Length: 117
Image 1: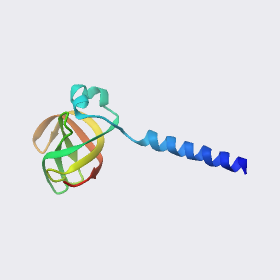
Image 2 (image 1 turned 30 degrees about the vertical axis):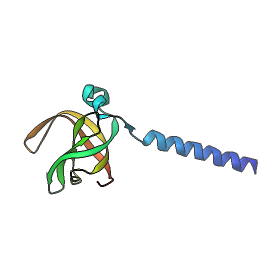
Image 3 (image 1 turned 60 degrees about the horizontal axis):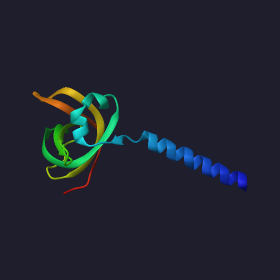
Image 4 (image 1 turned 90 degrees about the horizontal axis):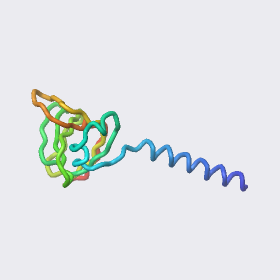
């Protein structure tokens, strides 16, 4: 019985470790804008309110403001409406162009959670 309990505890700890290492780190937009090279090649998470958005046929871009700054998010999942609370994760890029428009620092979205207005 003791061996079974130890095995369960071991597997719970291994599972929790794997889940935590798979999650992107959440940061604020001011830190990203201040040093975007620091975040290149790493999946990160941000959260805030959508202040601007445009798109067509499921692709587009939207701007998130988290209170520390703003950043554009490029997406292939459709754009959330203005005023929505959004959590997005993805990869940071510099000198990003989309639909004939150039952006400085952009988050290329890999996943999103929307919480409405």
